[in-house]
Length: 103
Image (cartoon, rainbow, N blue to C red):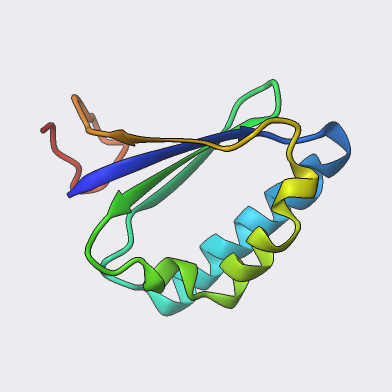
């Protein structure tokens, strides 16, 4: 499985809302428990968010969630930087990503 790294910074006035919207996506994932989704979100101290998305064949299990659609609705307005996307691979993983392996 490949991964995609997505980075962006959020305006200070939108930090709480962005956190809440991300949390709702994880609540929806917990409720639906899709087996094909691998998803991790980190927030840095400077307001930058980093999403790590496992790239399987079907991304609709994540992007089709109502909570994810709500997260994306005013995303451009919340951001202070453009979104940067890049492919990524796991080089090492020690008890952070469930089932993640190098390679």
